[in-house]
Image 1: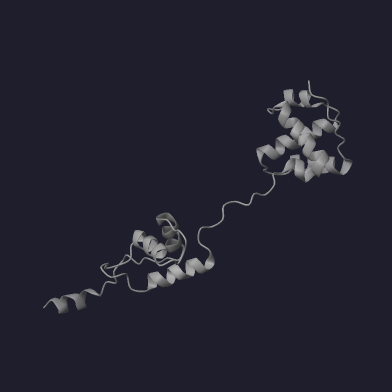
Image 2: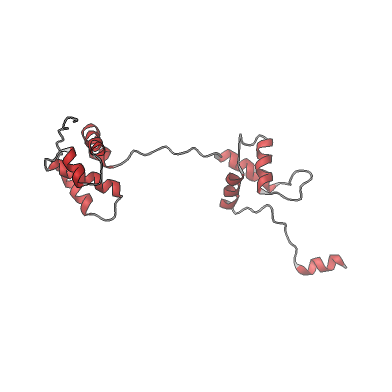
Length: 161
């Protein structure tokens, strides 16, 4: 059986925990971690806390370790994650938009999302770009290069005569 972790919850942290539990909507994981820390403040051990909360004893011990190592915020909240880097940086976006505003390549009547993606990579505007990335970019900027400009009806009828 693992050894007991002595966790001494600071009084100011206990006040913050109580305030968090009484406040409005919180993430479930934050509330469960706060409840575990509150039980530690009352003198409970990890196995006892694990029996009263829907968390494993290992998860309870991790909460205790994070509290003793990094304080209340580290125990309650997850670290921010860097996330995925965007495929297109600002200069790549601008180069693609400039390309789309120009004429389509020889042999094409208009730009399509697939054609924009292929041409952007072929012209070395960006190292890689998928159709979905291009579609989202064009949608954000409200660009629709695949649509032909239509003339008013009267002009078309006059040209056909």
